[in-house]
Image 1 (cartoon, one colour):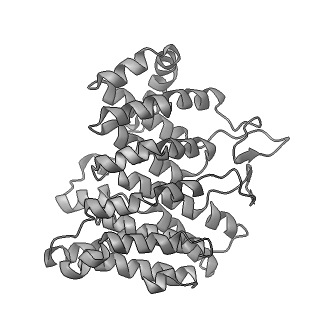
Image 2: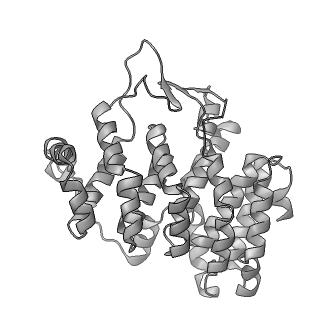
Length: 349
């Protein structure tokens, strides 16, 4: 805790956070339980949210909290080490009291998702970001996505009440080229729609207006100069196609799939004439074109025939920490493993 809260380099904070995560996964339950305590989490957030602290403190503090909420949420490099320690004792999970301790700081975290007052600018190949999303905001969205997977009614109510889900979905459309972000927001939407609480489903459909936002984005299809959002295209150039179409397609297909067993979703889709028309004329054709089983060349036989055992299923189905993967990439650029003139773009998204 002392090291992660100090004014050290991001690498030191990352190492300290990894040690804490490893303790929760591999140490005896009596030791791991101390890190899972509500008092520890409150102190962690207290240090992370101090304005004088570098953003890396918040970033890696959230990694620790995510590890407490979902101990199996590991990067691929850690998978085998985690697997070898499973037999040493049961994994320690965050208690409802610990989750409540995390939720006490939710409002402060959501304030950081407000990009309207930020002044930093990142030039890109398609224009500029004013401001770039940044790894700390990406980590906050990931934290929200994990909170929605633990089955806590209290957490879901707070996320709805404080508009955390709505803000995450807004970011999905404000940053149409950040696939790391799109990955987490898709998980948020799916968790809400597949959940057992009708009020959360209603929130995503109505207050968040996920269907309306998808239709507007599909209608525009390319980056708009009229938008007041943080993603600004270059004037005088052909505006590129938005980069979140693939995720929107997956979300749309999930809505239709779940509508077959959920009357609320089904009614919401069917009463929207624009959605029905778009589904018939665009989505159905897109799914047909993207169905690899219908391609003339066929799908590779190895993908048809290859068997998967239970360990392989678990490995392939893990929801890896994409922010950590991005951080590893930025470190590779920093230490000269690759050469690029756009290191800052990699680091800041």
